[in-house]
Amino acid sequence: MKTLTIELPDNLEIEEFEAKMLFAGQLYEKGKVTLGQAAAIVGISKRAFMEIMGRFGFSIFNYSVEDLEQEIDLIKSTLPML
Image (cartoon, rainbow, N blue to C red; front, side, top):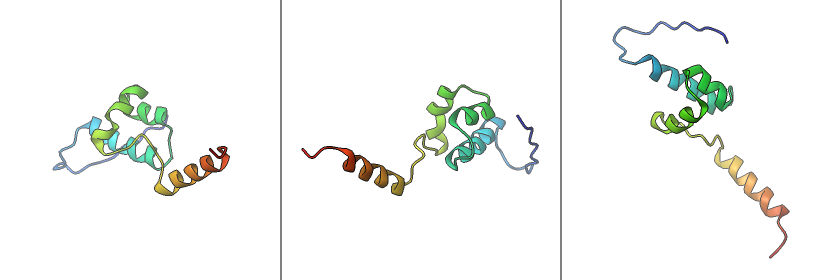
């Protein structure tokens, strides 16, 4: 893994864990890293990362509305008519 050093303002009250979660969550949502890689950035298990993502405003489901609509259309087109 690469090492990244970030200087933050002294008046910014943020724990290292919170900063790592915010960074890793953003990378995951943008598709830059996998769920496992995001968890590794924070230093926790994939399961733990998945369980706490919501507390930081991230969704484990990385789909836009358009992506979901395309998936639904694809499924509908492959199902036999009932």
